Image (cartoon, rainbow, N blue to C red):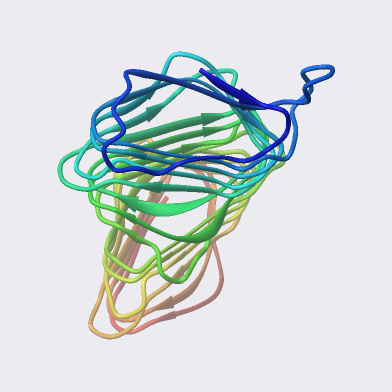
Length: 290
């Protein structure tokens, strides 16, 4: 445990090796958090008992990075763990600034934040993020496995042009809040969206589970197929499909469906209620069932 009267703490020696770390930049008179930057490097696995500052935090671990207490950071936060897991799931975390997460190999990353969350980074395998406020990006995300993003009654905006999400993506929010996702790779998605959903995929666009959308839905896949055939889909508002080339698009919806868009080759639509079309261009065959 190390506390300072508001000064920075910098412990960057690569040979540092502690089990549990507590760093706080505090006012010596009344113990209020102060603006001293916190930076620490550890050679092995590291447990964070506490981090408290109104400034920035940088933590590098040579083993798994976990926490046994809440983190309170007023500035940006950077967490790096090499070929090891990062598990920062404490329900009391309050990370105000942008968060950077970095690991590699077949290792997962999880983050819980009670505040709005802006983040970026590179994750070896699966990524799980739960935000108590709006969820957005400060930079690109590269994820080797699955990705799960939860934001309660807040928007999710993951539209960085450099995003590379390899595995299935789960999106979850509620209320009158939108969700948007951009991915440079093929995209497989599922989830529940409070209001409007916008997805842009750099490869084929498919599903790993049902989609429930309270507002409109827009799906774009460039010169790639769109296959949204899950029998549990419940898309409330108007749906737009857009692809090109010799690529098909298919959609199943348990609700009434209002559809528009441009499809490169064949379009297949199955609606659980009335089926209506706005301006729609189909390159070859349209098959519609209602």
